[in-house]
Image 1 (cartoon, rainbow, N blue to C red):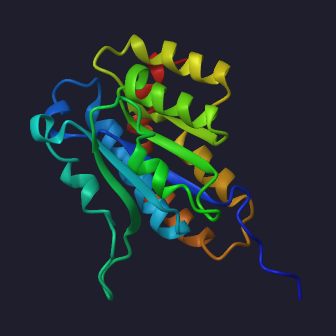
Image 2 (cartoon, rainbow, N blue to C red):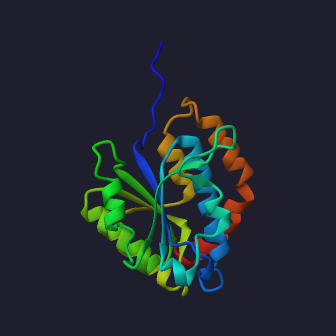
Length: 214
């Protein structure tokens, strides 16, 4: 019998960057960033990919939006709908998510080696996080349908810079299928169900966000 297929991109983590209440009316197409981030978190639960969440000055700018915080937990309750495994929830003043607290969580030999980033703002916190992770030797994916800024014109410039720096800029669906790599893995059917369930959200996010990034 052939061995079970493994993930094409193993040992990943999802970084959710500063998707907070006070930014809801300031960020270009904020609700579309949330839609994509929800899909990514649901995929993380299916694929057993851990999650790192940060907030920027939480006392002033608010918590992570409830549409996302409901999808992850440090200790998911038994018998409940499966949630993504939260490994760090850090408040910060640094723009980069690569804070001392996050670094400490990644110090173990078994820590993730690939990071997938969604969040805001593209040209500030997302960019500085990606650059720090690349400098530290991580493989970095930035999901173009899951990042934005207050001014939409900042976004394509930030993504072009990150491509040049060595990050992989792709879409949430492209990342999910690349991570799996093989339709024979046990999680495949659940991911396909997720893709079908979120197909309208995907179309809306792509048409709203990527039109300004190409």
